[in-house]
Image (cartoon, rainbow, N blue to C red; front, side, top):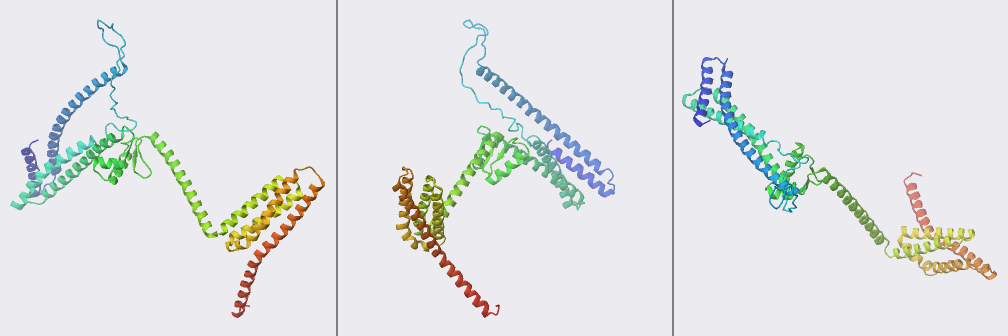
Length: 415
């Protein structure tokens, strides 16, 4: 449709509206305008159909060429039979290793071959911008009449509404076409590896990463990407369920490793804090724990119940003493005598008793064992007194606090 015909259509609509305003008869106005618009649109549609037919013929020719190429490729790949020649009879199988072109066809399980909006976008854009062009001309004519001849404003309003509606419809079609075009670019980036980083997509399209993520989410929602997922941090597009499952397993292993590292780091930090809190007492406590382990080992290796009971008691006392020092590291200085004499001597006695226990039951062996048992009883008694002394200071502190509290309550008249 040429420009003159658009102008004549606009004038026709303007005259119909003007006539209805002047006569006050709006009965057939809607039908008349509708007929005029339909006639114009039909003309536009016919032109679009001719264009589509031309495009269809091009597509058919392209498909034919592609089909021929695929047939030739299949023949090459399968190393098919050759025609009858003087040196080769018909049906001879010939091994011809040649370069094989990669399969350019999209996997329809993962991607839409014809993306949504590629067809409807053309229709919406063509119809919308066509209507906009027609009524824009009518609008210009109506505005001119209004300015020059002070005509009615109604034709201007009606033409303006249809122009705006056509613009909205055309813009919507353009957006659909734009999304379909971007989809094809995204597919081109992801179809081979089945994954692509958002950063790379943004770099290759000139769009922001935020726009790419939002765009991909909409396409996934519209099932344009049939199996696609974004990773947890939305930094990568993964095009297949199988690859996404592998990613999730890898991510789970990574998170577990990170969790273990954090746990180990936290444990090391706590250990370091505890070491700093204990200061020099840490060495004393570690040495005491080594004696506890020795006592337990000797107890396991010595079979007699009587001696085993003595060693159980000894282990309990030594453990409680060093637990007390761990609570109050300042008490470590009081353990020096125990570590320098009592515990080393106890170690020698227990090791000697363990060695004697494996000897024949001679009188001197039995006598020595009894003496060691008596020595262990004395050591237990000494350790009990030492532990009692450690707690006595605490008891004195508690009694002092109770006494002060009692005095204050008495002064306040609470007792």
